[in-house]
Structure formats: C-alpha cells, structure tokens
Image (cartoon, rainbow, N blue to C red):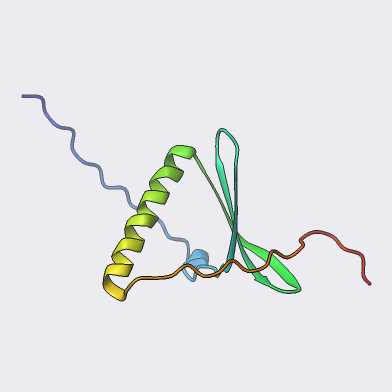
Length: 99
C-alpha cells in the first residue's frame, strides 16, 4: 500500500493592523483572464473611498464563491431567511467640476 504524505500544518500570521478589519457597504468586481479584482468601498454621498482591494486567481475565486454560498446557507439556517437589499442608486463617480 502506498504511504500517504503527512499533512503539513501551515501557521498563518495575522498582522495587528488587519485585525480590526474594514467596513464596506459597496463592492465593485472586475476581471481579466488571469485574475479577479474586488474593490470594497465605503460610500457615503457625496464621498466614497476604497477600503480594501483583493486580487485573486479565477480558480480561487470559484472556491471563494462556494465558501460564501455555504456560509450564507448556514447563516440562514441559524438566523432565518435573508432578503436581498435593494440596489442603491448608482452614484456618478469620477472627477467633477464644482458647480
């Protein structure tokens, strides 16, 4: 019988500066053939700012979507069915001259 390789434990460092997390109430997703880019934003009109950017491979993005779907099912089983929030009006983003 073939010997199974030993499982290696990977220790993950969690930098102090990231432990508090960041808040986002909006997200913009885009992609190329090689990667997905997720920009998380805090938008409070008339201003908004990117609070985090995550860039990942398409294969890992597929795993992330599955993990999010599984966690949403667990959340709803525990706390009840969620309804999707209506999409807020899309603000015009970019540079504007003062009126």
